[in-house]
Picture 1: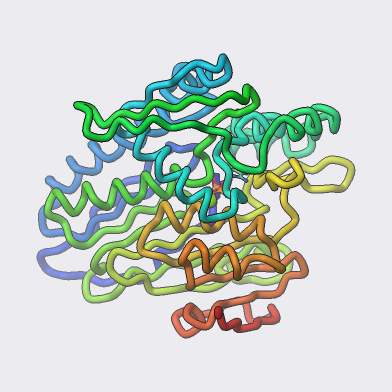
Picture 2: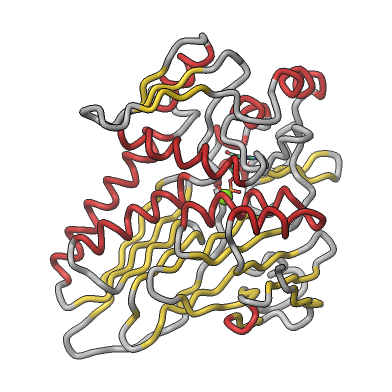
Amino acid sequence: MILIFALLLSSCSSPTHQLVQQQLFTFGTLVDISIWTDKPDKANLLIQQLSADFEHQHNEWHSSKKNSLLSKANQQLQQEQTATLDASLASLVKLAIKLSAQSEYLFNPAIGQLVDLWHFDQLDQQAVDEIVEAVLPPDKKQIQTLFDMLSSELDLVLTDQQGSLHNSLQIRSKNPAVKLNLGAFAKGYAVDQAIKSIQQAGFNHALVNAGGDIKAIGKKGDKLWNIGIRNPFYQQQTDSPVLASIKLNNNESIMTSGDYERYFSYQGKRYHHIIDPRTGFPSDGFHSVTIVHKDAALADAAATALFIAGPKNWKKIAKKMAVDQIMLLTQSDELIISEKLKPRLSIQNKQLKTTVVKLD
Ligand code: ADP
Ligand code: MG
């Protein structure tokens, strides 16, 4: 889970409106919900409901939680049985399949067993931090065996039950190496859902920040929500905790995938949690990828996919996934920013070489 540190930089006051804000720990990260409102009691009640929703989604959609709906489905898949997904998981999985194809399977939610070999998802962020020097990379033979079994696509067969009473979905696979892991985009999807719930409850000004994966509606008072993207070099090279900041428009999200959030070091090499399905190893594509888009689930999947696509292929995958507001931090610590995003970004870390790139 990404823990890009988002700073809410704007502040203002209004005689009737106030900021109602609560923080919870879920999805393996801190989730911050802020609502700008003149109905604080109603907003507080809603946030409690949203907290319960997040917790429920995290418990049911996690591939490493023993009795989650996804774990049960995975057990059935591994036994080559048909798994029936309930409506909420069904729409999540359908979207994951669509985005995965758009990403040329660089975002590949079927490589859960491969991801498991690297241990990241069994641990929460704090645990990873604590054992940063203690975890070993998996045995190469184990990686190779799984890698050889997995296809370059998804190996899933769907029986769409749309129109049935519960909009459920049946899936099966002939490949026992297939295991669904929705970690690369479930958080974005949950953020989209939370914003929808906030709107349905009648609030027009809010921000949901799930460990730096953020979506906003409306404004905070008379100012747009101002978001700081965490500077991964902070502590070492500069004194700014923020790499760049951006004002989000209504119904817009910003998602980041970075190699500095979940990792361990072994014999001087850093192993992080974004796995390249073409190698079975952590991707060496970029340091981080940030995407701005109205659809948080799409932006989340795209951030992961572009990260893996790397310097050679990111433009092609961006086009296929229809994202055009992109900031990439390369392995050699240069910033590449798409032409469309550049005028909106205020770069705080002036030491970095920055290149603006036009997407065809
Ligand atoms: P975060 O969850 O920190 O926001 P990402 O969105 O990039 O970061 O997702 C990384 C998570 O997605 C990993 O922890 C793992 O569970 C899963 N994952 C890793 N590699 C892939 C991949 N190539 N395709 C799909 N999911 C992946
Ligand atoms: Mg992602």
